[in-house]
Length: 270
Image (tube, rainbow, N blue to C red; front, top):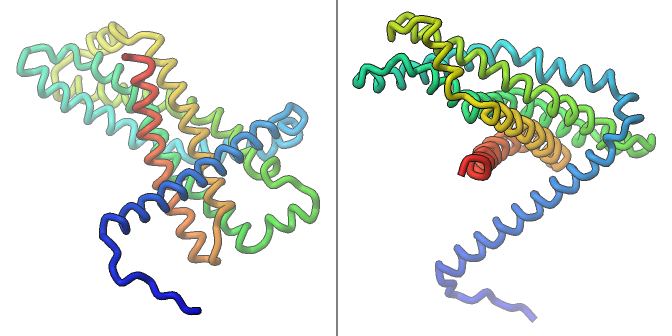
């Protein structure tokens, strides 16, 4: 017996169905990423980390050393923009000497880890998703399973350890470089001496600001690795699927970095 679809579907029901499918898909994706994170943490035993030290060092070089140039450029101009925009407003009240405080606190709390996370998501996260996606479509992951090599321990664990170490270090480097950029603007355009800029920069900055920023960077490193590897492992449809997985990984990393950054700030400062 052939059944016909009803001739009339209220538009609201159609939208509800689409939202439901999106919600179910997002829940499945988050759940699978959580399982991947748990499997990776279980694989981070001492003997496995020791055996994979060469792979970890390679990933630290790829995610850290190779990203320093672009991070340096972005960081110094971020500090310059913060100093210029803040200094313009402070000059209205003849308080431009306090621009160092604004730059330091902004870089430590938010802009340092945030900019580092975005750069690593675009550079390193996309590379992870593309590499693992290519391995999936070329059946290299299945070959590892045949050889009884755990893909999570062999591929994901070194990347996660490297990002957990390098992301906070790069975030601190971003903060210091941004403060240097802000100092350049303060000296050349706001007529603030370097001594006054540095003294005011460290005046209100607290250890809590540094630790919260490093904690954010640590979380961002975990998010970038797990999301990118999960999307890489989920690749289908050949070369087209690799491109879609890479694009999806970068977008999701950006969104999670924004959300997690806000939540951490809300928890620690309010």
